[in-house]
Length: 170
Image (cartoon, rainbow, N blue to C red):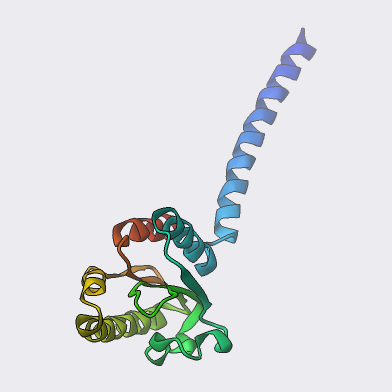
């Protein structure tokens, strides 16, 4: 009888240990695997494809060949960007522009946020006279920040894309 009692106590202790260990492993895993800018832009891209049939261009902001003619880069300092991507309309008649960057630190994120507001000013001046129906999308754009992550979103689907950003950086 004592052996049976000992066995059940040992089993109970083992189960408690396993449960606590499993919870700790999950906490460790989440702190070891932080979200990346690529994951965030991929989630936004997936949502955009669900909502729109338009063609878009995907840009790696750390690749000099891809950003050579990307107009916002004159405002964004690459040294402040740990990682970043953009999606823009494939045609010159599309105002759609989504940028997701992770700043190297909080100060860099502050500077990137200021730069994104300058991009907004440029988009407003371009689209207010170029194609007025696209200007409505520019007027509804947003710059979102969560820690060192920033998203600049100009799209017909700004609320849905903002939600995708928020869901993946929190």
